[in-house]
Image (tube, rainbow, N blue to C red; front, side):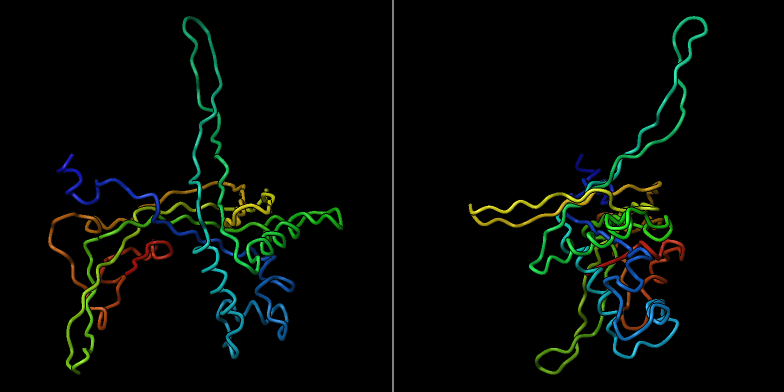
Amino acid sequence: MRELIGSGNKSPARSNLFQVAIDPPPVMSSIGGLFHSKDVTGIEFLDKLLGLVGIEDQTTMKRYREHVEMMNFYADTVSIPGRRITVGTVRDVGAMRRFATDTTFSEMQVSFLLPKDMYHREYFERWMNYTASDSENRVGFYDQYTSKVRIIKWELGSNYVGKRKQRQDNGENATARQRFNGVSACWTMYGAFPFDMSAITLNNGPTDLIKLDISFYYERYRMDTPNNAKMFKGAIEDVVIDMENTRVLDALSIDTGLNNFVGFGL
């Protein structure tokens, strides 16, 4: 057991290092969505969000950055989806045999801590109302209310260390080193949308934090792991990266196809 733990990548994983990324669906990026800037049209907004034109006031990207941080930092608990194979049975002669018929996935649920401005409650209220409006008795177009949700699992102490020059109080330059955390796995849910939002209970008892549970349906999910075998290797020599003169992903030899989910943090 000691040898396995000392190997680095075989040591037990931690349950409290994760990241939640919920991409806004098209209905939340159009006129009336939380990211819409009141001084531009819907087309101009999309151009700014996609970087096709310059952003003069930075309002749109500021709201999008706030959304990313709110969904990630306030995610208290998250359930990683499970997978089940459904089967049929046949019995010709002798023992009964089972054969695979389909694959089903469990629901995904995220529990958020609610801030004072009720950001998450307002966001999912709008998303679900655009999905199935209760005032017009209609539903939206599938491609407009579905999105992509990612759960990214982080681990401490990869074997990559970044170095940079740092000015000291005495005016001299010294080399500072910081060890990167690494992504060990990423689950991506495609075609996801919220279908259940929990009720909120208030009471006059002892003060407690308010939480909001959101359950998602999705088409399918895929699990990916970084392909860099040197990320968690225990006691072997560290890989030092010059943060000033080197692109980090190039130095880590990460495939470009994995750039969308492989991340490193200090």
